[in-house]
Image 1 (tube, rainbow, N blue to C red):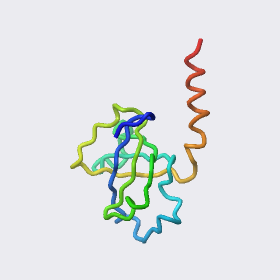
Image 2 (cartoon, rainbow, N blue to C red):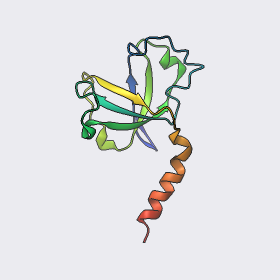
Image 3 (cartoon, helix red, strand yellow):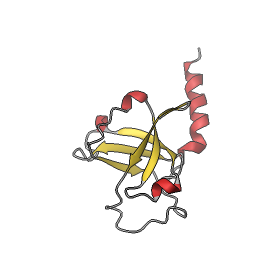
Image 4 (cartoon, helix red, strand yellow):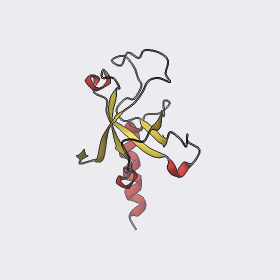
Length: 116
C-alpha cells in the first residue's frame, strides 16, 4: 500500500512462540507507532544488514482477530521492502519506548542537519 508517509504492507504473523492468548483490545502490544525489527527466520538477528526496521502503521482489531493475525507496517526506507511472500521472518517489538511521540521531533532534527 502507498500512503503519503511512505510504503506500507499488511503483514500476517504467528503467535506460536507467545504461548498464551492475547486480548488485543486490552493489549499494549504492537500499538500504532511502535518500532519493530524483522529478520529472516534462518538468520535469527545474527546479521545486522539483514534486519529491516519498520513502525506499526495500524493494528485494526478485525485484522488481529484473523488466524493468522495481521497488522500494517511502515518501512523506514522503500528500498528495505523487497520481501518474498514465501520467506519466513522473525519480528521483535521495542516494548519500552514509543516512537510515534518522538517522530516529529526526530524529523525536524534531520531537516535541521541538512540546512547550511
